[in-house]
Length: 333
Image 1 (cartoon, one colour):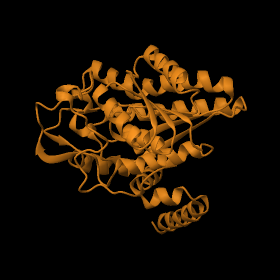
Image 2 (cartoon, rainbow, N blue to C red; image 1 turned 90 degrees about the horizontal axis):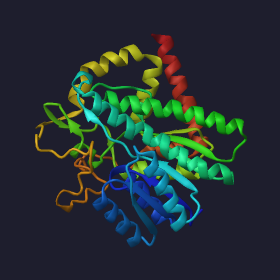
Image 3 (cartoon, rainbow, N blue to C red; image 1 turned 60 degrees about the vertical axis):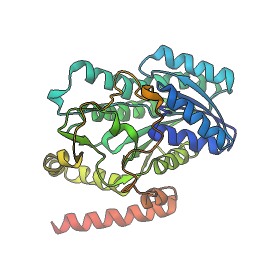
């Protein structure tokens, strides 16, 4: 499966960039959508150095017209789109009552409606050909909300419900177009260096943290095996979602007690930190942020859970053992 045409939103940095580079390294032709032109230039060079072909299209995914025009440009230049990967997002780190309505709206427009618009323009092309795959890059927070990220959690929950509805419609139509979702753990990306932050200290991902290549590998596998409705990546993702199923109220209290500290470093917030909510930040001084954030020293390069999840037989066995252990503990309690 090489030589496909793949579109990745949010491709200029972080997970999107790692995903785009992974597809490019396979020999796929990659359409890159993002606002940050410096980052886009950087990822084009990364892909070309790996021997791939890429097309950068500066795009604000919160604008349906721009997404439509970008898809048209990709197909005219690279060919019919085979895979569309929605990644682009933005966020605000603050208690809900400290997030201004226009900021909450902007997060929703980028992080949720950006997925809606990307899915729509992809389906407008794929359905006519009865071929194609859409991958929604999600999060543990699609199922489990945490404090200080109400706008982002709301968007991820919305993507989950939206994707389930679209999947049912595709099944009803007996379409061969597939849509799947990858739920990720905390990832070491540059977003913590540019997110709008109203916390007293600098924001950070909740440990354990994984490197972007772990996410990219999971997304690539999902694109190659889209019949599975959803993939979970990372032991922390599995543990959180299982705990949320069994004892959501208890998890509420645990996160209320630990969630504030777990999302902040011990360094005071920088009032001059750039913010990408309204405009890209990589144009300032021509900086290319790349795929990695500032947490390389603690980020894991692999996920045993994700490795098992890519092997259905092992996954079924592990799932059965986990269910048995959970049942035993619940019965004892």
